[in-house]
Length: 305
Image 1 (cartoon, rainbow, N blue to C red):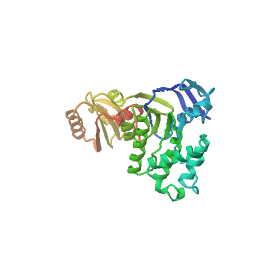
Image 2 (cartoon, rainbow, N blue to C red; image 1 turned 45 degrees about the vertical axis):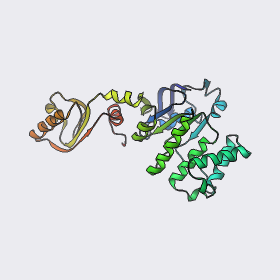
Image 3 (cartoon, one colour; image 1 turned 90 degrees about the vertical axis):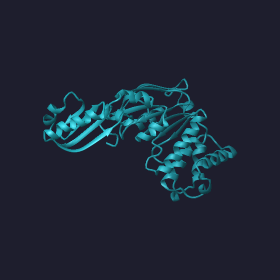
Image 4 (cartoon, rainbow, N blue to C red; image 1 turned 30 degrees about the horizontal axis):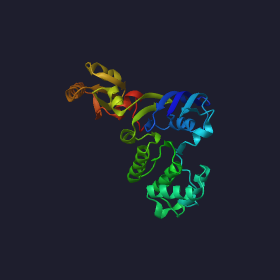
């Protein structure tokens, strides 16, 4: 359904997207997981035809975005990160305005607006000004805009940003329902649990590059069966390096070391050596193999950074 090959986009000296390749099958939810500034929004904008890539190709349903942009855009529902609503208009009026830009009108437009309002539980507040809506309600109306015209593909750029857990669950349920009808979705997020629970395949993206992609199980296999142990404190790399005793080191610098260990016995042995040598240990954290541990291994940092 979607084929992206070697797309690149720079803004001045900043390489926002740097040679990205991926494909998305029909009826699939493909997730982009990465921190702010990783290149997620730029990639979505290129696929949507909002930005023109400096190089590379984007093919959607067998059509080239550069040659067949108008036809492709008719297939897309775009839910941007920024809320695209007019505060003085009601929720229904916002939907009628945006729906008309999709080419809907008359009874068809009214029926589509009623359908999506009911779907997100906002029928009773549909005639209230958007300025009176909560953040979660605005996000739900924002989602409605992209679903009005029954798109074959939806592009969702962090659609749950800054909302409460209940509103997030509601939005994710709507996306699942939409995809269950055959819609294809690309979903960007920096929430690990969203990527884990929603996406069929996940691409980990950072600094404009895809570092790895696959199902959750495929990605977790990248770090094997070993736990990730992070030890912080007041010590130097030179002080702890002789104490590692064959432990696999993932990251080492003064005041922080991250190692991969197969079992709790290895963790205990390492800490015993540290304490016996007088190493000042402040905090120890242990993470089982997970999407988070994959992200740490690939990027060298936690996602919240």
